[in-house]
Image (cartoon, rainbow, N blue to C red; front, top):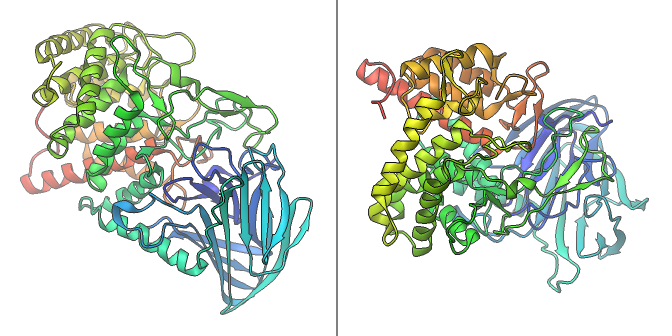
Length: 606
């Protein structure tokens, strides 16, 4: 079984199809030309799934970093015989800058090795496997390059060293001396397309990728504060998870990385959840700028199509706006460290999850000053979502944790319907024909009364996960974060205390008692709630604890094993980085207010 951990991977992006490269120099995941397509390297999910390795002999130490304000990875590798520097990136369109970065990327993977001192032997192994390892491509030579092709897919490897073809792989060993440089690239194309492979100068393309990312960062200055740089790193990750041709944001770059090693809780996150899209827009408003919100709303309106009364609000789409992302299992793959099954598609696309209406309307309300006047399709979308929230809030659903058993009356689903109607009533002057502020406000108040009456459990001393339940659930930490109730309300203070006592272990919040591992997003929610309740010292301590658990590049997956510290679940995870940004900003702004005014660090009651 492969011993590589999820946190051993670095994340590369070109705004189309992310890649993952391991600490030991193996590209084990890449799905060009689009993130939700079958991979050309899937060694992440099976030893025979395909990879491209540049691995050293006698390695002793590896130090990695992202070059400043970029997703270009630099690895300094020390061996018993010398030291080399490896840079990995995905190419950007030449001279693409700012908001144009990633829109027309060429689908070229770039790698460059530079000798720093001594002499280091490196092994190159290029072993692509297409369609999740189902297809072994033909290899052939073409003008000094190696072409791999089968079915609709072709790759072109440019290598400065001689490679031998054997067992459907091209391999070679070479020595890197101090002052020498070896630059490689793999370009993707389709066999039915007559366009040639993109063939940029590799070193120029690496420099351009670095400059492109830096230009995006410069156009998105974010806020100032002690934790602002952490937030900026996470903002770059969120931008890297964005499919720039449509503006859609992936939940994560991967499929089927397990919530626990050996577990069957393995899901495909290479799709666009409306919840994630909305929360990402809000996080980028903090850490970068609000420019993406218009793109996101237009994507949702286009993907949803013409609103129809009574039609269920779909919670997720493909990155191109596809509706049907049906799920199936790939039995021929062993899974990450034997965690089966590997799934493609996600059955949650057909679930009822009532909270998403609130997240979308909350995003529109937050950005209305930048968005107005609203596009007619966006107006229709928002009116439809508000009416569906008013019509369906009393129904059970699968909840934000996407339960695959019975539907329940989840408390956060009701609260987010309250958010939908609260924001819709405020937005009504911008929504034109069909808006019904009076009805929306009346139903909003009815939902609030129901949540306060049926969501509170005297015995538990807390709001619980579902109406009438006695089971704690960390999702209720959303109540103060969406303005439903202030964090220092005595019921919320009691709820926060119950969660701290029962759902926190080693500085990580578990979603419910018996949950597999600590959940990164919920931990950052608790940080925010503690800060809003005036407990800034405890909030800062918890923030530092969870943030220290990111990998060496500042990347998070969805969950963390509190015993081993191992990152688990799909990677990198948008939700986790959204949580970090929001918590960092909350701590910094409340601490600044406390310093300036000499008052408790919390804003007025919502």
